Length: 79
Image (cartoon, rainbow, N blue to C red; front, side, top):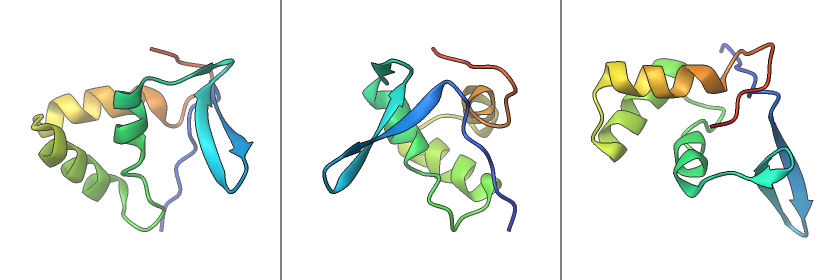
């Protein structure tokens, strides 16, 4: 299975027995957190894109455009 690397602008902070996804140095918008939660480490990218599209009622193309800046970046991207 192919692995994707999250944008370097985001970090995981330890919070007791859970992790909080943050945009350096701020918390990320709940919409972005919901969207990124579909990347569960088991599904491939296309499945994640499809599931996000269904959940948010977006087209596949719109979802790809929204998701693409968050993965496989050399530079930080915060929206």
